[in-house]
Image (cartoon, rainbow over the protein chains, first blue to last red):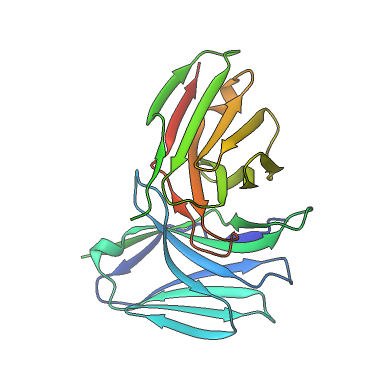
Length: 114
Length: 113
């Protein structure tokens, strides 16, 4: 069983609409969750982090976390063509030696249609 | 601005060769990570390091080793390259634990023929 699962997509959303990206994780003790954006041919860059249950908003982006359901999501409001990218969900987990590491999902490719 | 650099953007090696991929960060970060990224498999952690001369295996360490002799430099070594190690290799660093933002290098596209 994969530790972090995302809908692989691709996901197509009209410009101006809300894009919804979902992620589930298996490690119940995880406390830190991240969304990275990766443009084609580029490296991932962090766009959102969330640590507590509920919503966290940053501009057009909202991250939602539900630890009981082991679910984290990213909403992008007023989607723009520049939002077209692959979105990676990442969860901080603890290694066998007690060090923190990130486990990534396989990513969801999002295309915003003008 | 944090800068993470990798020694090569593209690399072509032959099966059986020893391959060195280098990563350098200029922000005095304690933690450094090596990932590989493959279509459909996402980013997978190969090795990471929380201090000089300290290393820990990630999820897919087989066929790889690492070296961290200086804080700013983290090297990934393929002892005997194989075709299944053809991939995009990404290095990242972070000032604290993995819960902090990870800054990624530009990546090295390695092809093993």
